[in-house]
Image (cartoon, rainbow, N blue to C red; front, side):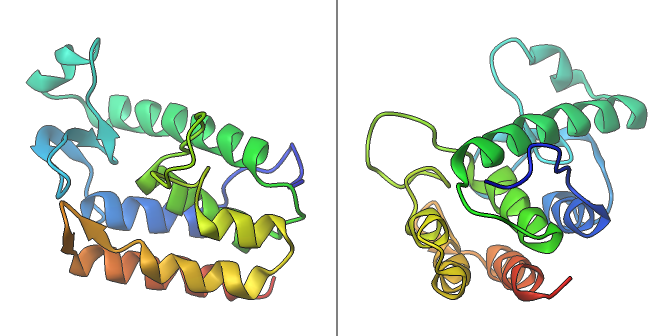
Length: 162
């Protein structure tokens, strides 16, 4: 039940950008640690996006980022059923930007939707939800130092009072 008017603040945007491409936008495609072709600020290149394989401009990267962020914000607002402060919202959006919303019919935790983090959060146990961030640090079966740093930053922001 986060306010439907909530948008990601500067802290959330900064965490996403920092961990999606080390503070520098990727104007050329690269493979992320999970093996996906990616460009801009963590935009996964999918069918229909093949034109991006030639590269994009900084302005295009910002436009793509804003669209991706809006899609993730809408998913978070749909999934979260408890009040969030701005820091909590930003942390959850950053997490979901990275792992995906996982809005489907199965119970396999492939992203926020079926995660224990979301279950704890929606039951009102914010502390247990915060502890779940640290479990999402693997890609391709390996613990990723970048994901450890990202989850630590997201957890700290989630617990930071407004």
